[in-house]
Length: 300
Image 1: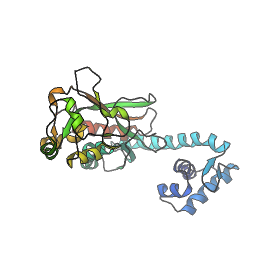
Image 2: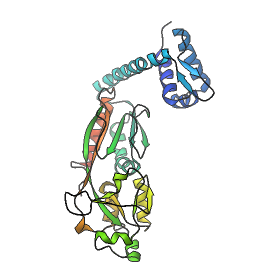
Image 3: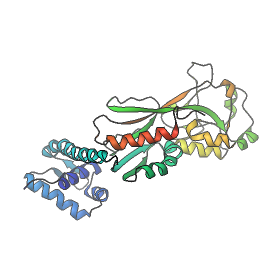
Image 4: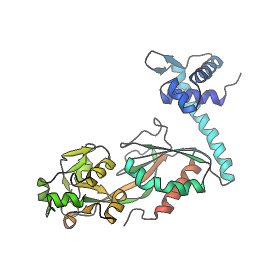
């Protein structure tokens, strides 16, 4: 009896999810159905693919050998379906998108209504992570990354760049005063990131310099949390234009130390694997993002 796609899909899902229960939720199946499907696959192959312990599932040697082949088979089927859909000019299927919370909220979410209208057959799954995620481990098709890229195994498409500015709320400045020079920051509450440390390098000082490294009194891993703290009048913050444009336009946040701020921009890329079988879905999504944002995307 030949192996079915459902059996391979169940096997891959269990491995990626780490448990039969989590895989069942992902596959929208009962736990018993997923367990039976996996058992049926092992019976057909006459081998054990996973070792079941009280805490987790581990791949056997045979399971380790089968996993990349199963992924390739599922990707090939996905690619064939995508090609057929592309012939009808109608991309279909699930597209999993990852981005930091500020980029998701301030850039991507406002674009979704237009994208859904144009491509109703593409099912979007949106996830927010403040750090860099492993696309395979997190089952992510495309991720938006801000700053310098390091992973050369990924294909990267430039989306634009966004300028950094030091900001504060009018309420904070009324209470604490307006800093006249960078040296005055010692008398102010500084808001910053707890990781990575490079995000606390503010673009203050001579152009072409290294900037000013600050030690935040209040720190967070999320740029959106820092934005909300600044809006609440808790201190000075250095954030990217893409998440503060409306705040600055409406006067909720005000740039400070403009004369001492040199232009520093964060590059923004969309990244995905070169051998992805989701080219049509990714292309239509990125084309829509760039079309709506314009190029350069984040200039005022």
